[in-house]
Length: 475
Image (tube, rainbow, N blue to C red; front, side):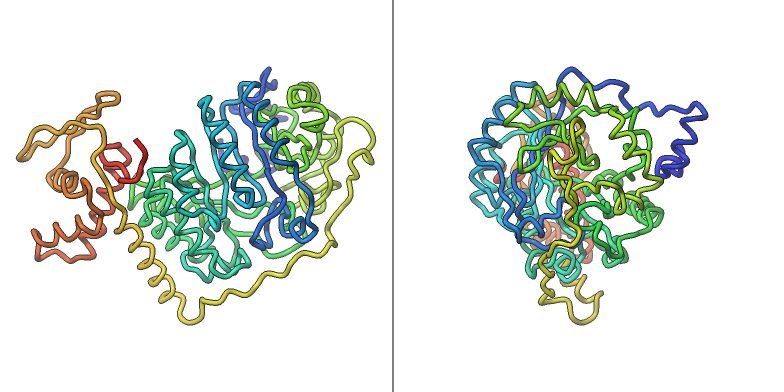
């Protein structure tokens, strides 16, 4: 499908009238939800002006959340419904650290795929150790800049860039899959190429690139528009240079969900910190309350009423994503609207004029931007070079010009070139920096920066194939 249709409400609707139908949409909701997103708290320690959940306002207002006991009960019901994927998010979920760790343990045992969204501020060594013991968990950490000044200005709190980068590094040290969520605004768009290189050096698995969606705090106003075409070109150039070393995903526009609302049946549900149940973050319609009605009943209502005229009228009033801030009901800026019953049932009150905390100015970032990016890159490279590895469950064979590795799980055989074979042995029990030192002693005429880049690339390839594991990865 042409990308211009994908990202335009009007063209998508015209294409549908002409007979075109997207293959990816569901005509009916499944009997049971496939996924669940649990927003554990309204509160956050950062002050992002584009926060889609409007957490800075809720933090200032001290909006109450469900209790730990209530969330544990909801988690048990989620598991009993047969859900296979769960996202734990907020606000900042690690403000409720013990609840998060209990939920991760409880949901991880039946083999549910878990994603934890966090800004990284509270992710210390002890928390990283606990998360690393849960198989299948993926951490999504928000980082918005190629240097501290860009990120800290967007997130409103000095020091938040370093906290996020070190949180990602702690998890990578323990073999946890890490995806970086990068919110793009006009303030940081120009540094996007440098940011991708920075994340490649850090060693993350993937980057999710997300232009601001104008709901929640962002609906109050601000300059958020960026060029998706320019972002795509940057991603293409990065992938041409690095191949599949790091997956970069540009978040699709809203047209795919909202422009064909009456054909896009939900497959998951979302539970707000208050217990109100929605289908997703873009539809501000409540299908009940997790505690008062139960998730099974809420899902029955979703399956029956996801095409409700109230929802269709709301979605049909949007000509493009730029209409979201002025919609009759703005997701996360307004109280949720019930699908059935009177609008007053859940308040449907707008919060556009309520006070929010002003972002604090970042402490660093003065001086030449290129110099700051270089310093940030050096800091990240130091973290990557200190990461220690060990040999995975593999068997090594061959020698000379023909080195082979057979993985114990699956029996896949990989042929290694001489440099990769050398690094397999050099990195077993050692750091990337140790491996660079060994190569430097053998290849004295080669520039050290080139050796570091090669070691980073080969190290990524070997860990992706599970030939090497992060040394602190649990067995």
